[in-house]
Length: 105
Image: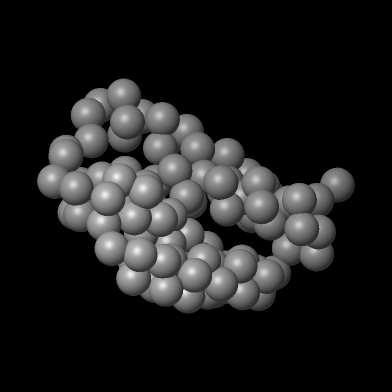
């Protein structure tokens, strides 16, 4: 469940930031409406994640965000991630997995 929430939150954040980025670079101000909706969805979904402390939830989310950003780069922007991108994303996801799934001591 937490992985799905993090993935959906990442989609909301990336789409929202991309919409602002597009507006800032000359697209219509109408891009700001989907930006606001997407960023609100991101915040809501991230608040639903299970860790009991916000900092831990945000730290784990960071790894998912990195990987999702590279998927966006490939699928939306048409730029294929290289080995360094994929290696960095794998490291970030490994860190997120340690934060989320290892037992607390």
